Amino acid sequence: MQTDFLIIGGGIAGVSAAARLSQHGKVTLLEAESNLAHHASGRSAALYEPRYGLAPVVELSIASGDFFRAQANVLSPRGIMILGRPGEDKAFEHDIADMQLPEIAFEQARAIVPILNPETVTRAALASHAWDIDTDLLLQNFAREAKANGAEFHLNARATAISKTAKGWRVSTANGEYEAAILINASGAWVDHTAQMAGITPLGFQPNRRSMARIPAPGGHDVTNWPMIFGCGETWYAKPDAGALIVSPAEEHPMEPHDAWADDMVLAEGLARYEEFVTEPVTKLLSNWAGLRTFSPDRVLVIGPDATDPSFFWLAGQGGYGFQSSPAASQLAADLITATPPSASATLIASLSPSRFG
Image (tube, rainbow, N blue to C red; front, side, top):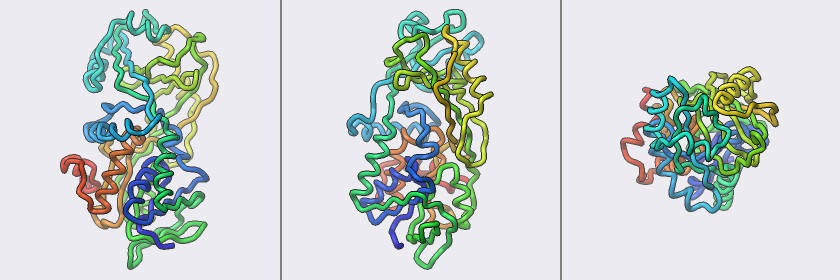
């Protein structure tokens, strides 16, 4: 099957790129699993906090804001709170400066989150510039746009071989072969593996596991309007979720690409860190899961053509920023692939280019 743009990966990176590229030619997307967003994209904490991450990530996230605000019901108010304990002043001050959070009195923080422990929480900061992302709605909006423009999505289509052709690339799957002039590598934790299959030098991406536990609303409180809460230094976080609370150890444990699951001991350690800040103990888990957050060597996304073969395009290393940066990241990818003058600065484009690892 011949197409103009062939995308490997059906997470938020691949699906958003499909929507953008579908305006310029025929798009085919291959997803190894039986549904889109099966891995990291389907296990996201789903927060739009545009000041979260390194400078190039922040620039992408801020540039995505207008798109989010134009999408009905994709964003909803959440807010963000950071807490510190004795001895954590340096980490606390770094975080609130980095994310532009004004410090508030403990009494103000406890009025919002009544389970905060006055014996352990010494500092708190709060801001409203964080929003929940309806990740399924955002993903489906991108998918609908792509399909309306003629894009084809093929599920259960794991790439088994990738080879060069006179016109570009051929990707073999159990469902058949697909050819295109441009191959977009948006395969999440598997991006280096995909590159190796194509004869392209891997860039050194590292998947890291992050676990989540869903617990009942602490003390029977209504958590609906609580902000997302972080221990400073991102040692844990908690976020309201449909009347319950998601708590994460915020771990980064290097893993090989796989269908991740939570480690019981890691969850227990993370929940214990959370419990140090609150007055209500965790007595029950409703569910738990894990995902792989994949980072490049410098922890910044990689968006651009491979230095040795410009027909192989990297859209990778989203780490924990995939959803919140996806509007701007996908637009930049489409601009670069189609030689459309991008709105992104030359400095940002260079900071995202795979050639920086050359």
